[in-house]
Image 1 (cartoon, one colour):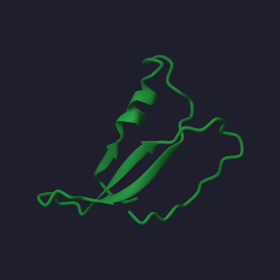
Image 2 (cartoon, helix red, strand yellow):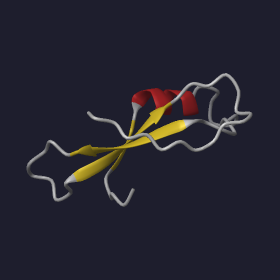
Image 3 (cartoon, rainbow, N blue to C red):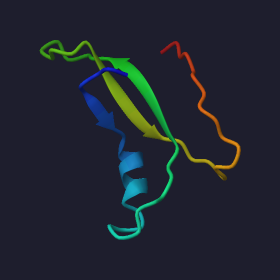
Length: 70
């Protein structure tokens, strides 16, 4: 998303480390969203937030572009 500032949600971090360092999950569904930076001192106007999306099965999933009005 061409933002140098990428922030990982705590739920995603917990999901990655849930089975320990040796048993890392093969696939994880994530959502990338570009947010406006509230910090006035930052050099970047936007940051990318990576969040975890729970799914029952990975079969038949495709990439979906969603425009949010937040």
